Amino acid sequence: MKRLRPVRRRQFDEVGDTLIELLFTLVIVGICAAGLLAAFSTSISASAEQRGLVTVNTLVRDGSAELSSDFQSTPADYVSCASTTTTPPSYQALVASLPAPPSSYTEAVSSISYLSGGGYVSNCPPGSKAPQLITFTVSGPYSTGGSASFVIQDIHPTTLTPVKLLFLTSPVSGATSANATVGPITVEEVDSFGDPSTTAETVNLSSSSAGATFATSSGGPSVTSVSIPSGSSTATFWYGDTQVGTPTISASATGLTSATQQETIVPGVATTLKITSSPVSGPASAKATLGQITVTEYDAFNNLATTFESVNLASSSTGTTEFATSKNGATVNSVTIPSGSSTANFWYGDTLVGTPTITAAATGLTSASQKETIVAASATTLKITSSPVSGSASATATLGAITVTEYDAFGNLSTSAETVGLASSSTGTTEFATSKNGATVNSVTIPS
Image (tube, rainbow, N blue to C red; front, side):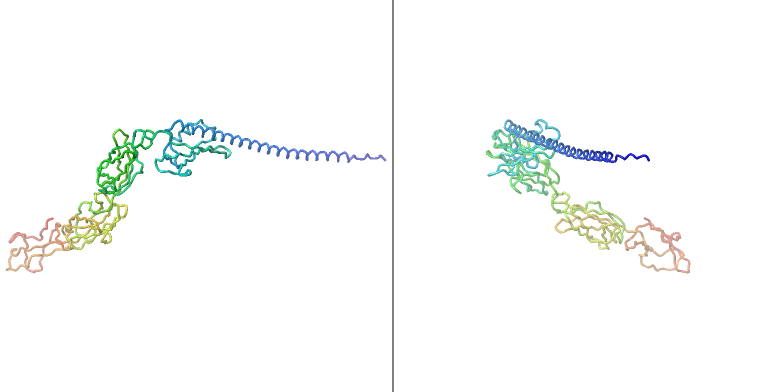
C-alpha cells in the first residue's frame, strides 16, 4: 500500500495568522492617522484664530491712534454732547476714512461717554463741551474682536463770531390759542464750529401761519422778537396759533443763518355747534324722512373740533316731530359726535306744515339752529268746508257757493290736483254747476 503524504497544515495556519496581523496593523495606522489629522486641523484652526486676534489688535491700535490724532489736528470734528444712541455723522465719516480693513473685519465707534464729576457718564446736558471718552471697536471672524478707548476734548476757540441760529428744543405741539402757551422754545447762536457764541443779538420771530403769536413767557404779551444778551448764547420764548396745522416758525438775526422748525397745532375744545348741511324741505310725515342733516362742532377759532359731544335735538313745530340717525329709523332725541370726529348726522320728520326751526344743543356749547320747510303730503281726505245751503227748488244750480277742500293724512291742507265727482242723494232732478245758474257739470277740479 502506498503511504499518503502528510498535509502540511501548520504552514497554512502560519499564513492565516500573518494576514490578520496585517489587518490589525492597518487599523492601528488608520486610527493614528485620524488623530494626527484632527490635531493638525485643530492646530490650523487655532493658528487662524490667533492670526485673527493679531489682526484685530493691530486694527484697534492703529485705528484708535489715527482717530485720536485726527481729533487733535482737526478740532472742528469734535461734536458737543454727542449722542450715545446715534454716533454723530462726523464721527462715522472719520471711521470710514480709515484705511479699509481686511474682508470680514468691521470698525466702528461703539460708545461715547462724557466726563461728569469724577467719572464718565452715558449722557450730558445739551451743548456740553465736556471731554468725551470714545470707544473704538473692531470685530473679526472666529468671534474675534477688540476695542480701545481714548479721550477727546474741545480744543478750538469758543468765542468766535456767531454765524447761525439753532433751535435747541424739540418741535412743540399744542391746542389752538390766542395766547402763546406752547413751549418753551429755545434758540441758540453758534459759531462756525457749532459752539455757543455769547454775542448780544436781537432775534426776530415769525411763522408761516397767519394766526401766530409769540411771547417771552407762557400767556404773556405778544412780541415779534427776543434778545440774546451779551454773555449768553440763548433766548427762550413761547408760541401760540389760532389755526390748526403744522406751521413753520423762523428765528432770524442780521448776518446770521436763520433757524426754522415745524410745530404742530391741534384743535382746541369745542365751543360752537353749526348745522353745516343745507336746509331740508319735504312733505309732512310721521317718520324722519328729511335729511341727512349734519351738525358740526368748532373750537373758539372756527377750526373743526374733535371732542366727544352728546348733541340734543329739538324743533319749534307744534306738530309731531321725529329725529332719527337713519332715514325712517327709530326715534331719537340726541346724536353723538365721537371723539376724534367733528360731525354727527340725523334725519327729521314733522306732521305739521310750516317752517319749523330745529335746534342742536350740547352742554357748554353755542347751539346751532336751522329753518326747515314742511309741505303737505299727498291728499287723503275731502271735506265740504262751507256751511250747509238752503233755498227754493230750482231746475238750475242756484244754491252756493259750496266749497270742497282736500287734506293730507295729518289734517294739513293739501295741494294735489284732484278731479272731484259730484252726486246727490235726492230722487229729484239735481244740478251742479261751477257758477250760479251755470252749465250742468258732474265734477269739479282742484288744480295743483
